[in-house]
Image (cartoon, rainbow, N blue to C red; front, side):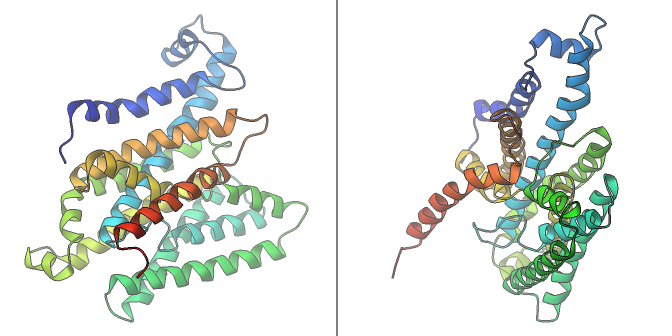
Length: 332
């Protein structure tokens, strides 16, 4: 499937357009002139508009773009690598590990960057544990997926223990709210680690997008083409894990984006990863900016992102599952 110049332009300009629109929208609507004045530092800009745009909305829009782009690109890479359209970025346990780390940090009374740091590290630890476990039983991708499910379930059980022993008047509400996902507390100090991780992880997957086309083939076919399959597989898993762990560390557990956005991108540009990876990055950023804007403006109280993505994602997943099921022959 070829990509027209209109499609390319839409993918490039989409995040910029919705990101700019998101700066206007909120409890207090701002005019385009006020937003532009705040961005360029015009002295005539009202102080409130300057504070809202630069102190609250801009870092949040950038965080939403990084979050959506990272989860979507990781999901697209994993779906190709595991040759399964129903795989997403959380399949190897990174989200479960990050959730446990954040919950443990909140139970200990830690805040801010400490919570994000522990969540990020345990997200990486969870995937490393899944990889190590799978190595004991061979190099099959199926074994790796099963190991990821096992490790993720173990970390989910430990998360239950943390919630059980947490102080119900203080730590437990904080843990519960964090697990629902959201970007309401994101400021510049929280943004830079996420931008760095997204740049590294998504940049690597963008460079490796041609390799993903080969790795999506049977392993013997990939090896016959001279590709060091195991080395590239590990590198792509590491990049996807970096993106997932960094996203969960900042925004909490936000599901469905890594599963559904790559499929939307395929309908636009096809299955060739040379186009799919950039399209997933763009559509993921656009989608998350839109959802975060809805989350903070639709109701008087902010809607947690995890709830909103679930309300949108579950019906979309059912449609996707039924289409995939029908394409493979239905009931037999």
